[in-house]
Image (cartoon, rainbow, N blue to C red; front, side):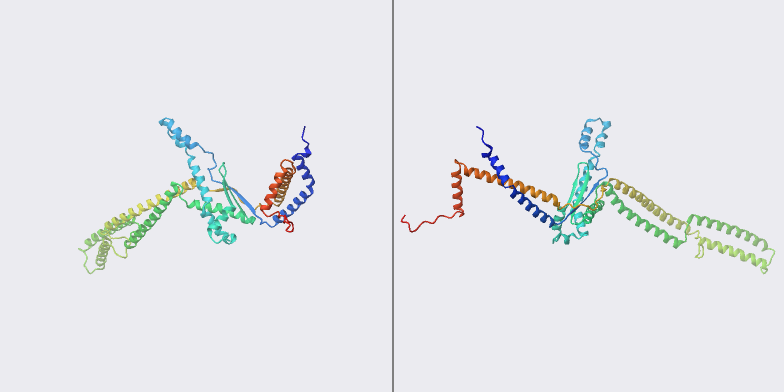
Length: 413
């Protein structure tokens, strides 16, 4: 014989629900009102997010490094470069991990906290406490496609966007100071050598300037040629003057004007040749007797200057090429989708909160009615009722929930 549904647990449970449906509705309504009032008192938060990428890092190169090593073992000697070619993507994972570590580093977070004065905003005494609060609000994740998602949740739309942008900016600044490649190490060494070469070149230039001021040799080759031409011209004039003087010395007396004029010309030419040979302070052409020594010293200074100039130019060219190589090899963060102030708040979602709490209370009410219905069924059953009533009575007396009956002192028993 089939059991009647009214006497079953499901039937009794449904009947209890129907008979208490008004109370359930009132309870859900009260909970909805309380949840609405509670949601109105919650602090409003906004979230701003940005999507960034490391150039070249989003390419899927997983497994190529291992395949490249296997290929290098299997191919012939003529194709050994295949393994290294396929292992190019090995540095990609290193760059991605490095960028992620820098984005989530304490240094970057501290700079953001100091810039926006978040120690006072978080109302914490130490930087460690501020970092703990900041990390709860910040979210930095790396997608399988190689994109970085940086988000921040704060009590202001503009502040959230500014914090996200500053995290990326400070991470790029930190990456620019980290030695991540051979090119950067070489560039740092080249910069030190370049500074030393520049100072050395300046010393050589000062020595050349001092030599020219002391000797008057601005252009030694040209000045030497002009000096020889001048001496040759003076010697020719002297020979002509001496020949003329020798010709008239036999026919004219020493007291004549012509004889005196030619004599004075010969003496002047001889004096000029002696001065040009020895050199004087008024001449732009050094003397011939000191010219060899000056030229030797000038050549030594010039060789030293040209050598240092060549080293300087070589280091300068190498430094520029290393800068280009470093810019190509060093990881940088480029923003694809910048963080902008959000129009909708991320917390609290008042409608969702009211609906969630109302549904939870509704199902708890149904569960409570099910428990009460099952308990009544056990107590009303002829087989289990006396046992459970006795258990409830005993538990109540042990917990002082049921008062013991007072005995009648007047009774003889």
